[in-house]
Length: 203
Length: 203
Image (cartoon, rainbow over all chains, first blue to last red; front, side):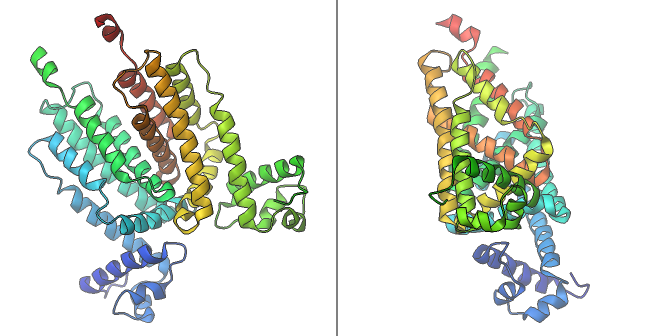
């Protein structure tokens, strides 16, 4: 990104990139497609970003910042409630078509990671943010007595990240609704992680 | 595939396609790259297959047949043993580099599914074969009294497919070892699905 790119211009280009990725996917995306989704010309985009690659890296950085902010918004009085709220939000496709289109572009980028260390770097940051968020909620839930003290927050967080990734991949590859994984993870929280009334009574 | 393609020729081309996909990935793959991995010329490949697309569809069909055969080979006296054997085999990368290379090509194809119904069709068959295999083992385990009678084989099978898909995606995207998901699923079998000694005694 150019030093003279204003926040407003950057925000407009990021929004246009999102729409262009949904419409064209990653592989077929051209700078012109992004320009068509903004008030800028293709030449203006090239003034702000050296290349499509540079623009896409800025877009991923923008997504990571946005994602970190959203993670902080999980609502609930207790750690199990915040975990349920997060799983419910993350694995609900409000607009199924737009969700699948965008996840398709993200999956294309994931498949490029072995060839492209700058993508790998961004994908690792997404993965780590999500993992750290889940690990923290799980550790808080254990410390506050809501979750089974024997559970390993690091390991359960890892399992949640893997299952969420799988739900998003299957949604793109075979149109499996992501909500199926949501129901499974919500049941898993209640049946396996949360300490049941009988266990609390037993203490 | 041409009607005159012998089984031996087809097998050689399929093996060559596997190696070429590992080396070049899906997007960059050319017929010449496949020819280079066989004793055939590029012209000979075009005699057997109309296009790269046609050859790749034959390759996916070949993988599905191979996969179905492998599913029948899960070993063990009981359904839980066969399930453990399958999870252990499926989520162990004998050769980490080759595994990641091949899974990268498969992930590229998964990301093409929304644009390409012939790929979607093959990916759905993989997904359904795997799901049906797991559902059958789980239902057998319930019928034979090894698994909790309250479990829903269809739903648990779906969760296993999603987690396996997620493990393969994360291996490509962020180099997360697939064995982490293996350990989680093996524990899940023993801790949540299998009826524990105390529950057997209670009956």
